[in-house]
Image (cartoon, rainbow, N blue to C red; front, side, top):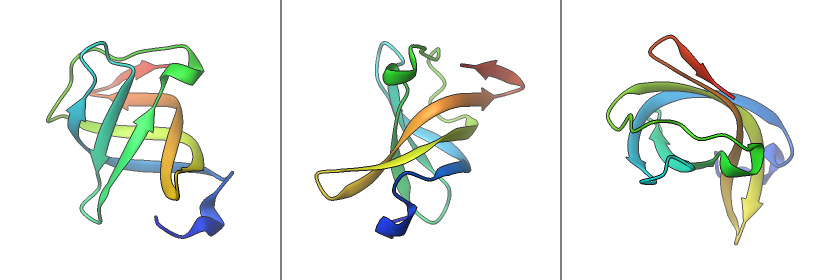
Length: 83
């Protein structure tokens, strides 16, 4: 995902939640190719504590300080949808 060509594009990624903000406003997901930071606070929602669970993230790739991250627009975890 380090390709800056993804900047501004909508993507869907699926992986395991490795780390999560205590209030659920951001998390890091690993899809077996690497880990990426997902910020959902700009979309005005949070998720419950789901560390270690599979998540499907729909969002926009942005570059912050030279690194890609995703602004999550919707997250699906164990059949539950958060948006």
